Length: 271
Image 1 (spheres, rainbow, N blue to C red):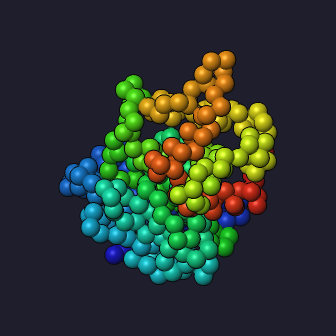
Image 2 (cartoon, helix red, strand yellow; image 1 turned 180 degrees about the vertical axis):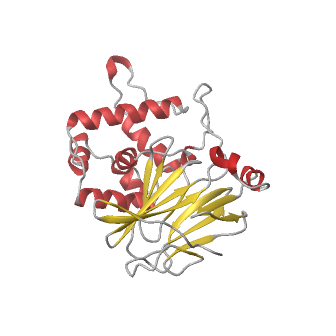
Image 3 (spheres, one colour; image 1 turned 135 degrees about the horizontal axis):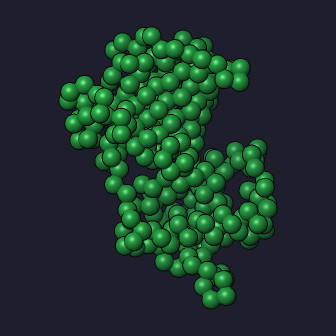
């Protein structure tokens, strides 16, 4: 596989390179046959003009010395990540030892972080992957086949909530509420108080309540029952229901516990 001719630029003192995994809305310009393959479930990687089409029984590693050679940057892992297909979806796996990958859905603005050894489904058809090696910042523009999204007009308890992208702060909120279930799934939920949750997140009371309201409203629109504010704008059970749904429906994984610990160590926003 040829991967030459990539240009680099500079941004804030660090250089950057780009890998493009072709999106469905970009397929009009593809050579004959590629668009149909992507529509049938394949993943198309466009790196500096060189196209690599992945069938669902194939995977692709990327890094300093991988199937897709990114750069000879000594700070970059030999094999930092891998695209693979399982359970009917395309996944990104962080195979490095210390570099974090971050996925950002360019349509929904949701984001997710992948620490070493973790994996996550591509949250959309148009995803940006960031990682930094030394002073160099890399961006992978990742896209694949269409993802069927559920419309909130017909609420249903069968909506695949684990397939829906959630923002980083939404995941943090769910994790701090559901932490005991994630760590001890066979034990009853130990729900933190609002004050404890706010303190761990480093959020003000106003921000915490706003984020909780928005998250509960989104899940309600997706068919989850019991998260409305109730009579007088109060619902003492919704935090418990939210935590149980997040774990039982597969929204949260062990990697979210790592993300929560990292946030507590260095909270980016306490407003």
